[in-house]
Each structure stands twice: as C-alpha cells, then as structure tokens.
Length: 271
Length: 191
Image (cartoon, rainbow over all chains, first blue to last red; front, side, top):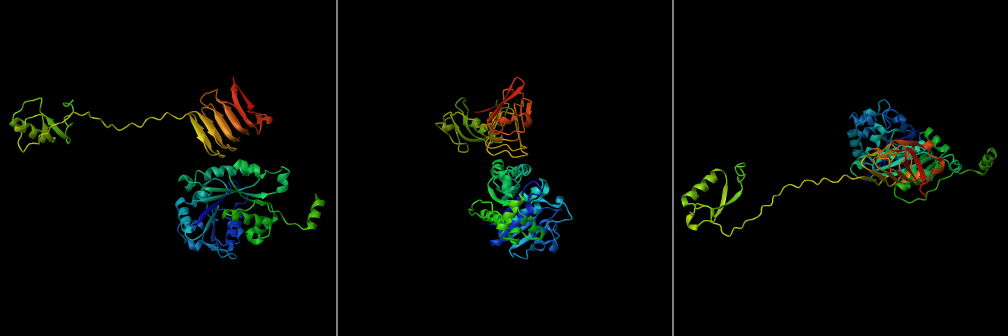
C-alpha cells in the first residue's frame, strides 16, 4: 500500500527540500520504491539537491496539462535504482497546478511506488495546499526558533482541515522533524528546546537533525546527505527518522559530530 | 367538513353504514353506483338487512366497531435548545479563529500563538493560552478567561483588553484567570 507523505513547514529555508531528498534517499536505501515530487513550481530546487538538474526534460506541469506522460517526466536516480524524481517546472508558477491534475498524478503513482514524497513549497498558498492535499502522512520540518514553530502550528491546523483525509473525517498522521538543532546553543538558552517545541506543537517527534556542515556540503554536490556521507551526524539522524517512519522504535538521540582529539583541543582553545 | 373537502373519501376503502337511514334495494343500488361514479370504492355495507342487498352490491359486513382515527402527522423536528457552550477536543492552531457568540468556549489543549477565540461567555483553556482570547463579546461583563498557563497575546472581556505587554511577567507560565472589575481588567494566578 503506497503512502503519500508531504514534507512541509510553512516557513521557508527550514530544510524541507534537503529533508525530502534525505528521507527519500534513506527510504530507497532501505529497499523501498520511492518517488519524490517537487511542488515548488517556479522555484524548483529538489532537482539540484538530488543532482538531477541536467536530466530534466518534462516536469510536473507538463504532466498536469497532459503534454507529457508521467513515465516521461520521471527521472531515475543514478545512484539508487529505486529512487525517482518528478521535477517542478521553473518557467511556470503555482497557478498552473490543478487539484484534479495533482490528484490524478498521485493516484497513478500510488500504483507503482511504496512511498510518494511531496516536497511542499513555503507558504500556505496554492502550491503548499496542493502538495498536502492528498497526503496520508505529513512531516513538519521545524527549526528551533519561534517563527518557524508558529508557522508549523499553522500548517498543522491546515493539515487537519484542508486535506482530502481531513475532509473525509480521517486524520493525516503528523510528525515533527526538528532540523538545524544545536545542542550546545539550546543548552545555553539561545534556541528553543525540544520540549518547548513539542509542547507548542503537540505532535509526535520524528527526529532531530543536528546543525552540520555536511548538509550544505551534500547539497552543493547534488547528493542527498544520507547518500553523500552516510556516517555523518545528520545522515544518521535522517536514517533514524526513516526507521521511525517505517514503524520501528528507535531511541531518540541527537547524533553528535565525531571529532578527533586534535579537533576538540583546538576548539577549546578557540573558545 | 365534508362539504369543504369533496375528495376526502376518493381512493380510500370505505364501508357504508346505513343503520341511520331506511333505504330500499333500488335506493341502495343507486347510492352505490353514484358513489362509484365519484371514484369512491365501497368495500362493504353494514347496518342493513341482508335481504336488501343483491349479489352485484358490495358484501354485508357485521360486527364493525368504531375506531379512533390516529392521524400520522409527520413529526416536526424538535427545535433543539441552542447549545450554550462549545467544547473543542483539539488544540487550536495558529491562524485558526473560533467564534462562538452563544456562550462559553472550552478548549482541551493549547491555543497557539496567532490563533483566536471569541466567545459570548467565558473562555476556558486546559493548556497554554498563547493566542488571543476575547470573552463576553456580546456585552457580558461577567465573563472570565481561565487558562492553565498564560502566555496570551491579548486578553479581552466585553471590549476591555490587555496586550501581552500589559500582563505582568510574574503571571507568565502559571494558571491564571482574568475578569472585569468595573472597567478594569484583573488577572490573578489560580493557585
């Protein structure tokens, strides 16, 4: 049974696209057949983070408008054979998306994939509402700061009212994914603590992704962080999150960076 | 009554009771046929001697008893007394607005920052109140606002309001209630 998972946040720049790529790759690494869809029409990024920007021919809008077939627009990942990408259009805008068109694409993909990950654009307008429209589950990406948490709260409210499942009286299963978390800064009170975030959002926690250079490094080379450096702290955190998505119980720990002795000595002197 | 509704017996099974009149055989035959012409079906006749009836007439019935006709009027949907309170089982999220001018609002959960509750009566929040709460909007100055943890952006009762800045920092993060004393809003801890 295919699952449609929307990765959303309300606020921009919190790590939706990075998380979609990392979660999608991690699911594929565990043997699931995965498609990631970029809903950010006009500002597409997922192709870059996935390293597929040079292979885009047709896109989501072409399929919605019937110009291309779904199979023509799907791009298979070069590293993982059961990971696919449906890119967004860069030349159009979100008004080109239609409810029926998106519904039909999702319905078609359900027949062929185990997981359908929808990378939502920021905001609460058409692109974001259509990305969440057909979701069975939602990952709400949140940074440990007040504006991000408030926007996430707003998005959770929309997931509970504007999705097909909500309109049928069912519930979209929601998970909070905290990204860019810095344990040291949280301890010093410079960031919201995990407890504060969960108290405000009243939604179960899927994982905590530590702030790390590895994330930007991976994005710059066009590789999901779970593929680029599987031993890195954020990659391990994403892998744990995916295990929880698949129903495993995994202890909630914040993976720390592994540093050499020399590194630690130098860091102390600098501080 | 019958004069006003000549179609009353049309299409209905009718039994003629002739005990009040004394009719000859031909008179009965005439009555039955003229009733048939008016589309009234006579199932049987009673209160008359069997000798007066011919085979072409409806059969004689005996032992008929008067019954009380119960009229089956469609039951009017009973007007439910309007509920005077609203109970919300889920947290009220940022951006949501709950307006209930008929009475009290109770929230089992938190009210998020940027959410708003408008009530004709009092507001009860079993969680943290981070958004706006406006009680007694219909001019009910006895309405109150209760919450388990106060971090409200704005509290208002009957139009008198206080913003987060006016709320004393010593009250923050504690159970509290707000009420009106004259035209001054008071906020006190609940314990």
